[in-house]
Amino acid sequence: MNCPGCGQLMQQHSLEGNYGIQVEIHACHSCSGFWFDRKEHLQLTPGSTLELIRLMGPQRSASALPQVLSCPRCGERLVNTVDMQRNTRFNYLRCPQDDGHFITLFQFLREQLEPGHPSSHPARSLIEVGLSALQDILAAL
Image 1: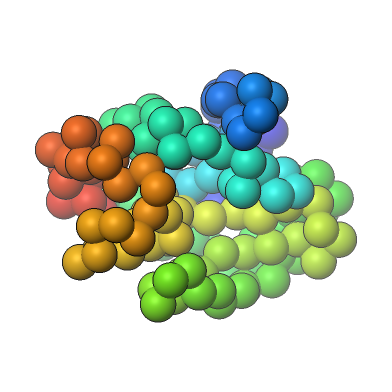
Image 2 (image 1 turned 180 degrees about the vertical axis):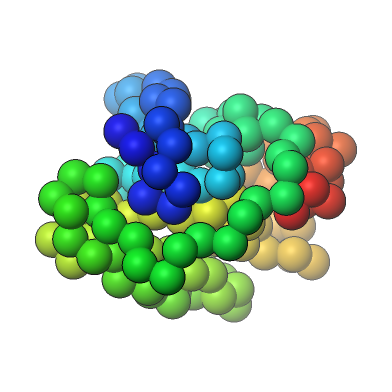
């Protein structure tokens, strides 16, 4: 699958999901974006969330996304969406046909982590173990 953000080939990663299922995530290492098919992001375990962050590794500065992005599944124009997770706003681009959504690493981190509230996320203790890697990623953005 080509990345809707930069057009580069995305890498597919198989991660552990809730109830023992496998979740296939598409990640773009060029622009630091993810494509999640229908509700895949909700199926990730806390450990898989951490693994996904580690897979991206320290990144170079991400380039600006084009004004118009298309769904890699159906070709429809992606719709900019603002959502909120525990007092933190984040943006993603969703398919109007509900095929999935595209989110940058930075926005994914905003969705998953609320700064200043150590108990706000069930994976917080796992993520704190890899905090130095996470800080490297954030510093590169």
